[in-house]
Length: 81
Length: 320
Image 1: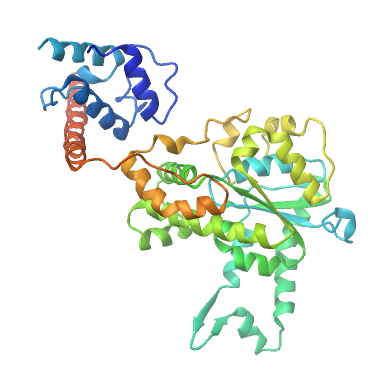
Image 2: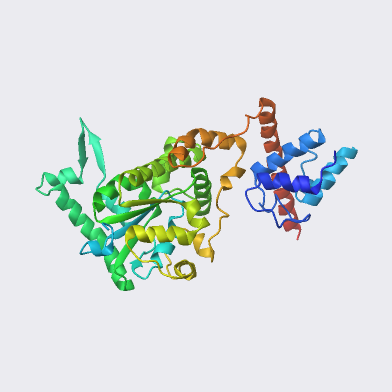
């Protein structure tokens, strides 16, 4: 099942400490501290469960996982792969 | 009314109490905006006096300290307390007089750690306004305070020596402060209890209750005046002064804590939360061992990702 932007925003809203209502597809989330390490790990677990694939060191790059747009693109590439 | 300003020759002082990070500075701003009450920034005068009264227990029930020590020199406990009270209150009274106001209020967040001695010192001569806040929000806010200040005040450091995990240390500090304050609220009619969550939801209603308790009239526009006031530079919460309005953004932030942390804090804090009238914190089913292990592994990968990014940034800076 494809991961939608609203699925992702709903997950982040449930786990981030700060208000994410103003976040766009380009907003940097982790590198700016908008979501902290705890929320980021929750997000990674969520992505693994959603895609059914384990994340490896090669996947763990800021340019894969820092914005909504990057995350959706990354998940889509994992689905195709 | 026993607490009214007119009931005694000298108007009673007001002592604001709450565990640190419970909204005491916001309360101070609101009360201090009243035309008859002066409330300086944190003075630390009461906690300093409490330290003066500090006692150690030795032998069988013998309490070694200034009160017993001076009693052997011919000064009764009441006389020592009265002199100390006069000394400490004189600063509050003089500050109020300078402000052109007949009454004083005192708020220093860390007073909550010295409640027994402060009660002994103040005797019957003050009214208390006590604020309680959900313990897990207090813990989160204490964590932010420590990050911001880069250190621990003595009162918190004492807890960290006993509880090496900071969240648990902050939790126990809150439990002790909130418990002592609740005992005051439950057992002393001079004490009014209110909740932070009620204060931010309806500041006017909360302030009306406070003024009724301390025997002062409501003043129209008091909340707006309090928030517009920016002259009181001094010790206290830095965040509240950045806000021109009161909002509920700082309520229930604890719900975003990781599940494992919530579970640990819930076990420790639930009895006190229930005593204060809050719902106990319930946490969904425990994480499986496999998920906990994977969470740990992802944490390590995340650290590596952060380090890679830092290296890349440093290299780019060096290049430019």
